[in-house]
Length: 64
Image 1: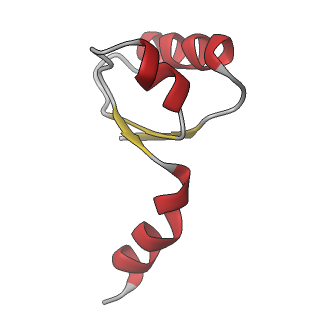
Image 2: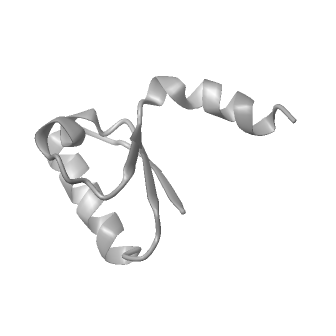
């Protein structure tokens, strides 16, 4: 599993996503942010989460 945080707007997000898919073709991608990419393309092969959800996710992971 590869976790990556967005850096930049749509052009950078496209570059980041395609590079990650090229470097890690068989790994699951979890992307934080990337809302421009998600709005523009429908068939993104990754889990895209809003950056605002990060504190909640970290709490759930380390709660037990």
